[in-house]
Image (cartoon, rainbow, N blue to C red; front, side):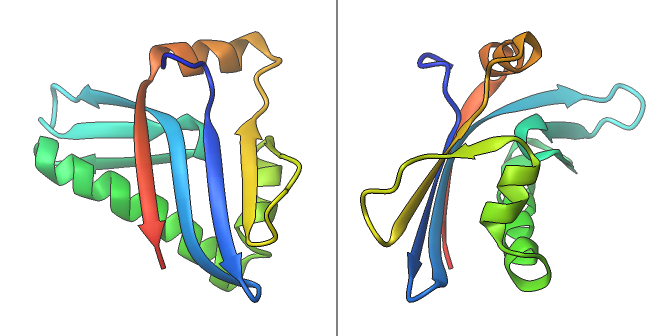
Length: 125
């Protein structure tokens, strides 16, 4: 990742989640035993798989979208889940937008950011 940052932008209107935009590292690998492609999204503690690259892209989108929707429906909201995963809420200047950056003080996190392929994921609920 060029800018060494992972960010999430959440948009809410009247308390309702409208959209989420994420820039996060995603690691992919092919398992030689089963032939599947696996994707790890360490900063959200998620993993998924697909049978080929196109299927894996869909799986990544669905996995992150599921994380967001489940956090909203069954948890205390995406903001609470992100705080538990060591994301840091930034000062909000717009009343409808909430921004999070990943805390990278620990060397292992800096390593994760620098070794993963960055993806921009965008969801409109």
